[in-house]
Image 1 (tube, rainbow, N blue to C red):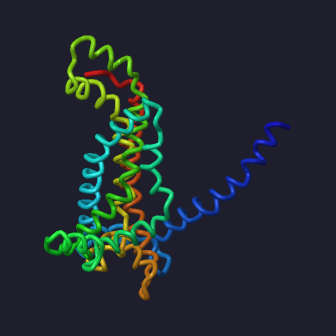
Image 2: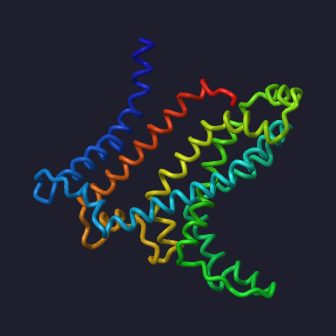
Image 3: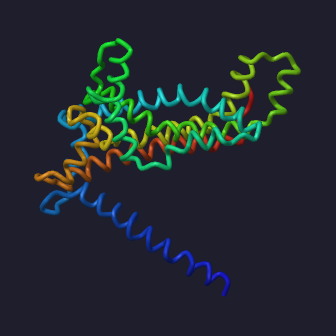
Length: 275
């Protein structure tokens, strides 16, 4: 009877997953491998290799790698600082950092529009200080800046969670044995934080490859990514759900590859050894 009760409680969740995850995924795969007449075809999936789609696809990968690299460079020192505060049981600074994540994604992106416009806040400050205006709006750099800002917490938090798990006694023992700060960082902190780093890279790189909202709002239609191609395939006046499904499936394959890589490193978390 108790087991039956647990199954009944899981029923709404299973129905939700079936209707909003499994069924759309099945439809996506079906449309990706069929044409308008319902016949089997690989042209929709192979469309990612077409020069028209290949250029925004490569641009998306390049931008995603750059965004991921910037997030990693910014996040690791910040996670070390947050770890220091958490060791003093001062979690207020951690809460302040994650507070922007509670704000709507669109509102945060709109805020960057107000900052980066030619007559926006940034240029007003630069003009007041006697500097010339910078024209960042509707450029790839505006898209990169907005993407870094929106996805930075998804890199910081996994690294932070990995760092707080490091026993302070290990670091103290290394210091007692004469290890300096650089040696501790290189041989203790970095190796033990690798699972968090890999998790953060996955959480930033995967969604940023298919990003199109930030590109539309901050790129002004001048920055064309693969996400924009897919969005137009589904929503434009010449909508082609089969082509859009094929391109989406190609991105899903990249996501699955990234997840496999992540699970490989995550599975070695318990086997991490000091250098």
